Length: 423
Image 1 (cartoon, rainbow, N blue to C red):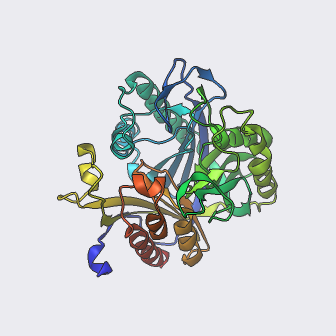
Image 2 (tube, rainbow, N blue to C red; image 1 turned 90 degrees about the vertical axis):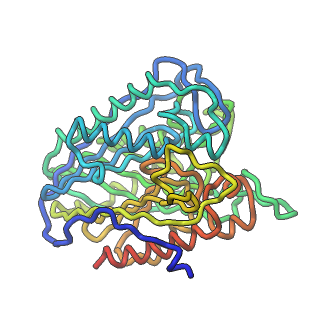
């Protein structure tokens, strides 16, 4: 029975008392653009030959009555859960910040350097046989800790508000042929999540501190032919919004496992209409952000963690470095999830490329007023497709470490947890 197959581990839960506290917030942006050629990750192994646009760590720090929340958005494609854990230990040692209060997400640009050892990436995709760049990894790690420190030092009285809008900058990427075969491409008839989730933080006088833009879209406007460092679509949009709105803009990807940008895998920025994403997505965000209410300075922040056990595909390897994320016999994955409730809105995250239908279904049935899913957060365990996608086949199910059971395992247990968390 399903309920006998799943184990829920509530690892940490903040006190549930609903005492609203004055909100403080701060934000920081640190440049992590490399000065030397780097191995790029996301397609075949290739080395950069220059820079198209700069890449950054962007950090939002919140504190309500002594309960903090740090959100980091980094312009890279992915990193191993094991590397994430090592960086969080370093962060805690150098700042005293509890890693349970930190979410580290990536924009998933495919035009940025590798970060840390590619253990999971190599296990699932068989790529990155070259040695990883320890000097750049050290530089980027130090920059991340500096950014978190800077955001914390800037904490000041603030107001927070949430909103949603829509944008047509993305499209389903599981193309279907006449014989039913699925391949990477564009599928205008396939499922897609076009909701844009916004979290805005301002000073008490209304001036901007930060804006979080949560939208599902692969960072693949440019293909593996591109050899220049870039934040791709997410990076271009974030820079444009910072220019137009002020403050620090964190692009946090959503359930983009089966979602591409509408212009996808072009050889260069011009061919891929990269600048047009400022209109397709950026202008929709600007309109929505300017219409948002002032928000509230009375906030409750609650943290929780959960691990969901689900069967692992036995025909794919499992790195020794990630033994903590599997059962002792390695037949099941222990998938780590995070939750943050901010008043009547809940954010939840997973270190996977989730198919959009799963996150949309949970959002629809969630007991919270608003439910935002943050993907590619705190590491990367590969694709998490729907059961239907496993039946259909294609690139994502073929390289996923999960089985067709994972959709039901995740959906059932996340919804049960959200109902408990809401109470």
